[in-house]
Each structure stands twice: as structure tokens, then as C-alpha cells.
Image (cartoon, rainbow, N blue to C red):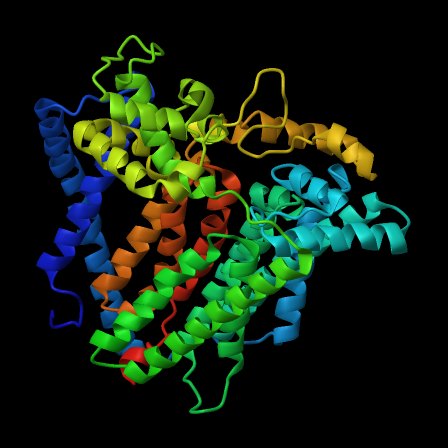
Length: 572
């Protein structure tokens, strides 16, 4: 370790050079796939990528590391002079901070609510409303969220006088939930000494960030999940800044537990993201020299949250008499990879590049797995067109045959497997990617841009749900922004709206913490990266999928800058 307590410079530079290499790798391959449609992984191409990645990416990574190292060293000297525990004096009562933040956020989003009254009924809501009407539930969509919609509809019908008003009440519930979570996060940052100016800027950002308006009024599980995701981030930092109280259960631990429960109930991949954090706690217990008791207690709380979440899911399954949903969503990546191999090597005649070199046995299994020649619908940036034709029976009951064919194709066509993964995940890895904005675009169908606002009016009309905008002028302008992907026309700032930038911002922040050897503060990033890993295996790049990472970042950033945020685990 360096004299000033920072990470050794050779290790720090190696980390950032590696990050720079991968950043250049994904930018170069993303650009090539967007322009050429395919990459031939020849020795010459690999050498070019390697040289450009190491030279360009290495230089950028080293420059960033140099700047961060200087910043960290200067900050360390300043902390020694001013004192580690120095915090900003609080002059406002907590109730005023929370209430004022909550009110401003609600007022900032209410115009969108009036414009889209009763709500934006897009994404999965037509399917969920159909399940509610038919009383036939499927756990492909979280049952907790489907029941939440059902209760809103029943409340509207029985209390408010119409189902439409019930959907409006649901939208208001989401607005209040998201605003309350944001306001609570701002309050806790204020309690820990973040300067009011920074909190005011954060509040204004949250109020005017356009996606917050759209998502807060969209009838989708992702908004509720995002609220619990941010709440768990806040609870993790609170656990880092507040010592555990022996055998007594603290409010911080209860917050952590219930936010875990919410994450698991409102997204099917929520528990997979949380498993990564649980695994980190477990490894810390096994290998950590400090804080084993602290990590052990959090590990037990994590296990308790996982058990409670799965017990709750089972109870909801039994309560509703739900049927188990098809698991093809989990096979999105293999579907893309096998379909791509088929159109490039299966002799299907879809592309002129098809060389017909695939073995007959592998071709036969793909035809059993992807029915009705569905591979002809292969779209590099979204798996849904092919996924609709998949027969998951092959994976469930012929797993040995499926695995044999999958690994056989991987050995024969590794480049196509890599291309399929890079193409469908380009929006999450390549900051300049724009395919995410048009992934759902259909000819002559509006409301299918990056922000989806399309109503399936023919479905909702039969259930008493209809558009009733209270501010049509604003609705027309918000529709242009959403459906026309106008954010792509904004210079520089447009990258804050694009999904490909966020993982790099988190990685830079993680690098900053590692340079300062503040390893315990990286714990919330384990949750973020666990969730991000599930996105890379998903069917496409969507705003609603990346949204939790977008809204959590400002909180993660400000918590990471706190001077009085002592690492309890390291100090134990």
C-alpha cells in the first residue's frame, strides 16, 4: 500500500488499463456490427482489436487512473487537515427535507399523469389485465404486480365508480412510491452530511429527468421494482454507516430485509441479482480478515430475505392457483445464438452468406427447438421474434441432446456465438448504440420507441380502461419525445439517456473506491452488477430494464463521496 493509504499504483493502473481495453473492445465491435452486420473473427481482426484496445483503451484508462489517483491523494491530504468526521451542519429538520423533496417530485411528475390519464398502459399490462379478467394467472409476470393491478381495478370499480379511476389510482400510487423512496434517499444523504446544494441539484435532476415521468405513470412491474432497488441501495449504505447493535434488530436491517422482499416479488430476476450480493457476503465471511461478524450478520439477513421472498412467491402461487409460466425468457441468449448459427450455417437460404456447413444432427435439434422455421425471423437486437416459436420441451426433457448440440455449435462457430451476444447486448455495452431506440419499432404503429406508450386499446376497452387525457396539448408533445426518440438529437447530454453509458459510470466509480481502498463501499455495486448480469442474458435492451441502474446511480455516487461514511466492516 502507498504511504497515503491508497492502492498500489501498478495495480490501480492495471485495473484501469483493463477497463479501457474492454471499453474500446465493445465500442469497436459494436460499431462494426452496426455497420457491417457481421464480424469475421480472423487473426487479422483479432490483432487489430487487440492493438487498438491496448493502445487507445490503455491510454484512456491510464489517463483516467492518473487523474483519479491525484484526486484521491489530494482528498486524503485534505481529510487529514480538516478531520475525517467533519460534516455539513444541518439547519433543516428531517421532516421538512423529506416532505419538501416528496412534494417537489410529485408536482414535477403530475403533468405527465394528467397528460396520459389514467396511466400509460403499455409493456406487459394488456397480458396482465387479460389474466385478471379471465382469472387465469401465470407467473411469467410477477404475481404480486398482477394482483396489485387487480386490486386497483377492483378499488376503482367498487369504490371510485369506474375501473379507469382505479388505474389512475394505481398510477398515483406509483408516483407516491417512487417519490417517497427518492425523498427518503435524499433525507438520509442530508443526515450524513451531503451539502444542501448537491441535494438540491439531485432533487431537480430527479424531478425533471424525463424517464422518471414516463416510468412513474407506466403500469409496469419495473417501476415498483426500481423503487425497491433504490431502497435496498440506501439500506446497504445505511448499514455501512451505522454500527449493528448486538442482538437488537435495527431499522436499517429491517429496511434491508423488506427491500429484498420487494425486489424478489416484483421482478423474476430480482432474486438472481440479490444472490450475487449474498454470495459476496458469504465470501467475505470465509476470506475476510476483518468484519466477519458484520458480514456474517448481513449474510444471515440476506438468506432470510431470500427465504421470505420465495415463501411469499409460493404463497401467491397457491393463492391464485397460478400456472407456471414458460421459461423461454431465460433461454433468450441460447435462442439468439442457435438461430444465428442456423441462418449463417444451416443451409436455410435466409442469407447469401449461409455456407451450409452445419451438421445434420445439430440442424435437426434446432428445428425441434425452434418450430415452424422460426429462425427465419432472427433479429440480431431482440430475441422475441424467434422466441415466440421455441419449444422449451426440448430443453426440459431432452437436456442432454440440447446441451450436446449447443456446445457442438459453440465449438464449430464461436464467432457467431460471440456476434449473437454482442448484437443483442450492444445497447448495454456500447454507449453510442442507437438500436435500442428502435428495437420495438413497427411500421405504422406508434408508441413503440425507447419509451413505450402504445395502448392495446382493443384489449382495454372491454375492461373499462380507456384514454382520457386531461392535458391533450402536453400529451401530444410527450408522445413526440417518446415515440420519436428525440433524446438522440440532444448534443452530449443524450448519452445520459442511453443505456450503454451506465455500466461504465458504475465501473469508474468502483475503480475510484478501489483506489481509495474503500472495499466495503463497493458492496452496493455487487447488487448493481448482479442485476446488470441478468440484463446481459435478457431478450433485448429496454428502458424499463436499465431504469433501476439509471435512477440508483446519483445516490450511489453521492454516498460514495461522503467523508463521514466510515466502513463499519473494515473498522470492526
